[in-house]
Length: 299
Length: 282
Image (tube, rainbow over all chains, first blue to last red; front, side, top):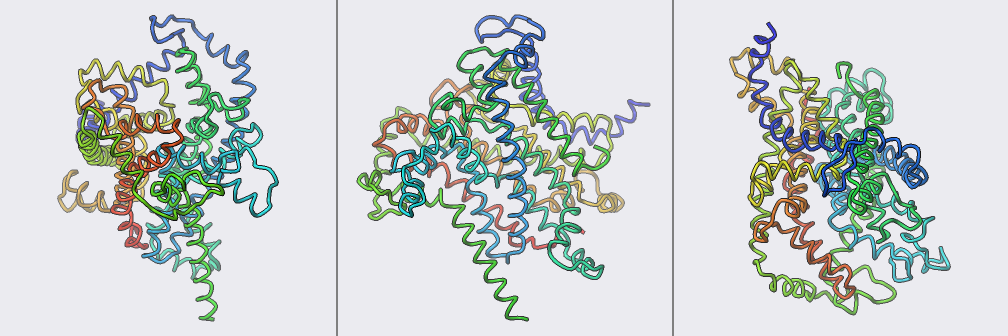
């Protein structure tokens, strides 16, 4: 019975097969091995040695850098950048959809470009702009208009680094989630809005709340998940901005930096894998929330 | 009445344009920086716009590249081939996978979708070593397969396409089947055209990922002639970043990496964004 049911869906399986093969080989198997490593001591040279739960126990009870810096920093960073970037991306997509066709594509491109500079051009663009001496562009401008008296150490002072990281990340948060939501808004049938006007929708805010958002739930969900994933995975930014690893007084030390630290500097791969698993659980929890907001019942 | 709505439209457009200018400041900056002669790069007060544009930085980067043992064109060739294949491969594979995940009630569907979302969330750092072992076991080290296969499966792309296909009414797909179309025809005639915006976005994403990808060159390629262009540029700019005097050449390198992304975006996305105009799914 079950076999014949599976056989009746053979085309479906054929369709998903190419993806599933690559997915299993290059994503599932490596990740499951990484989860396995989290229960071992592994320095990248000797064979991994099984040590049970001790990595996790050490992580949540004794790792002071993790408990004192990585967790609070990540939390602060994520709580602002996650929802902030998400709302900014959605509102901008909505505003762009109100523009006329010819202008629309150029404005959309302009909003999208900062997300391209992450990674590729990070140091070349942002370091000179935020440089701590008076040659830095931001300092130079602020000094000129008399907003500050002495140059500020935007990226090397522990008090300011986190704010700079948040500002730069927000600036570049119009990524793939933004494109998906823009397409989602543009996809909505105009007759829906006409019907809404007859039913008593008065202004564009009501229209946004009662018509636009409910008709693009799939894209809203995608945007939310991507916002969570990119927020928690962004880690290099503090190191790149300050040019120091670890960041000054651990001010920009995020969970991802902690993984890098143990994985590639101290070569304690097993422990780094345990931190990755921890981060996965945190993200999973955040995702449950967005699924509750925008997911359909079956998922 | 009409006049006031005109004023509102003009001020709205002006606001959006001002915001756009603000957002592209980094790009304007890098363009200007690339054309600045030495004495302008470190002048005080710093200038945003270039005063005497010249191509000295380009010449400098050219001379640095001319000294490399493997010709630059070889790196470029590798990058173009891999990016092209990956855009086509990722788009087709992801769409093929997303369609049944969205519309067919086959056994195991929920499990597979949950697995895709879960894997999407795992941080990539620690996965490198096990992935290295897989690539080496498959015997695709130092081949184009080693560049291509590890980046073909994109959980983000499948998730995005599935969300768009969810919006296509089931009745439309059933109608197509009643008309005698099989799954393949339905997929090509109905599903693909109706989620073109998502297809374009996935293609952009795939291009960005493969064009800027340094990981496969670093880990899976031993021979220099198998490495790609961004890897080559990164070896140059890593040295340039420490060397203050070569900031201009580093800006040129960043510009070369950025521009294909912008062009690819304009080609694919602009058509979708400016012509779609509320005509899609009913």
